[in-house]
Amino acid sequence: MLCLKNSIIMKMQEITKLSVEDLKGRVVYFREQLTKLKLTHSVAPLENPIQIQKVRKIVARLSTEVSKREAQA
Image 1 (tube, one colour):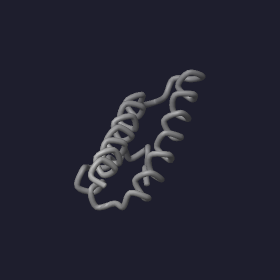
Image 2 (cartoon, rainbow, N blue to C red):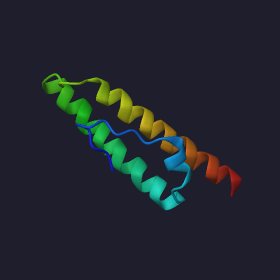
Image 3 (tube, rainbow, N blue to C red):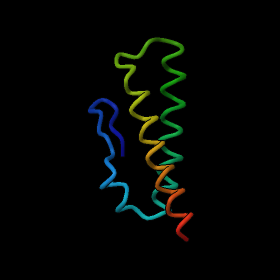
Image 4 (cartoon, one colour):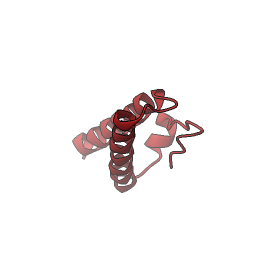
């Protein structure tokens, strides 16, 4: 899903193609990654701390899409 070293970003076009179950699964996955990144960064500085911001934005995009779809249903 996410390769932090290559900084792959999920775009909205990719997100809209996913099912609600996939979206929820990815939200959980990326929240776990965000927690791990924050913990790692608090112990020793990350080589690229912008990764935290990128993962946080991915979580926000996914959560927004889940909320939007649940409101439509």
